[in-house]
Length: 219
Image (cartoon, rainbow, N blue to C red):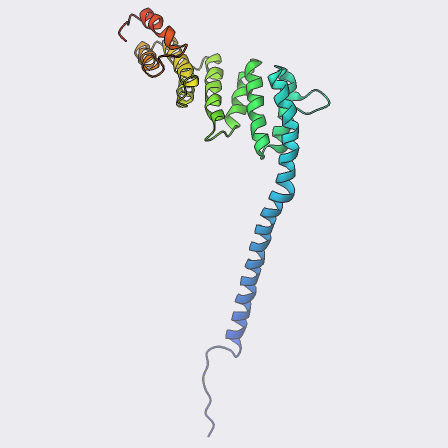
């Protein structure tokens, strides 16, 4: 007598499922390879040439900035492009990022404070000296817009760069801003900090007079 075995799965079901899974894994693997290859391809064949082109263009922007040709810094001279073009076309590169700095500083010196804030806010100077000069420039821009609280905030951020030139400069500006905001106690505290931490700075020579005008001569 023949015995029939019972199997709830159709013949070949396990093999077909494995085949489908294998095809899926291969597809995922191919996709990863394409993505990784695409990333390195982008870095090598797109981003690297863009960085070189942007760097070349930025050379002239820096030259114009040093010459105080601020409109050229922004728009170029008709033959060569300015910082705004570099930001628009190569904004993702290091040179494009630095172009934001030059554009922001040019706008600031031209009295176009909203545009300056927009550019300087977009600049990424994390971990570099430029970050602190940008904070100081943002403080200047907000003070020009009569936003004293933001001006003070950025001046104090700029003063976190602990050197003997910029720190006392921005502490002094923050103190003056506190005075304008009728916050005499805060101004006094910063003047005394300048005197204690940066006694040989130009700002320290102004501290005694500033404190005297505030009715405080205790150093």
